[in-house]
Image (tube, rainbow, N blue to C red; front, top):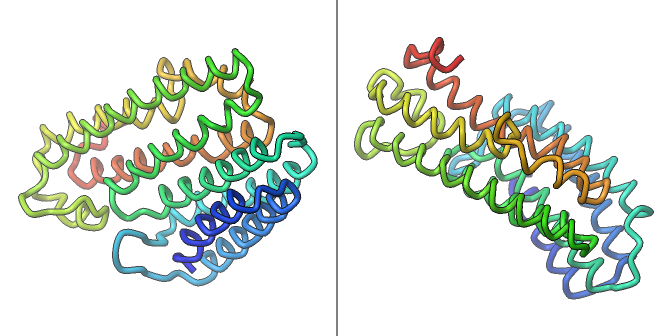
Length: 259
């Protein structure tokens, strides 16, 4: 089931690009959305552990289910809302939408902090294309502003991840379960510094003030279905690694500092 979530959207994206058919694009998005919802319901009733870089813990499933509900509504509304005569433009939009959801899925299901970072950066690239869908001057400005500010934030988060490497013992991974297991041996000073950088970095994508200046422009210029995903799903995706790091801070005994 987990591989289906990660492989199916890539397959659909390839079909969208090759077929270049608006009607087929809309149908594939709807199929993907309902398959996504079905998978989330499956995870709600049957918890499974997947070895490697992905897992379905309670927190990840919760955020995944939110994405599913919103994506189904967006997919249905999107079929009648996005009506452009240019087939290639419609295919670029549909492909980016599918990959945007794919990137958010990877971010919430990743069991490794580094992989979470990669998928969150991928959401920036995919959603920037969606924000620029109308091809206007203001849409271009909003798209570049979004890329520039969020990329700076993601860079700060990356610095935080590097500092976390200093805090943890040698030969340790960034797997969340491994980090929680090693909480007693993590250097508190470097963990504090790493947490601040990651809070500012992922907080930029989350839209925490005063790092939210990209948000009004992006939402006003993006098509309504995209704006719904940005506010209802993407911001939650950026919140997840902060929550996971907060848990680590709590285990190390730094809960008051993190609050």
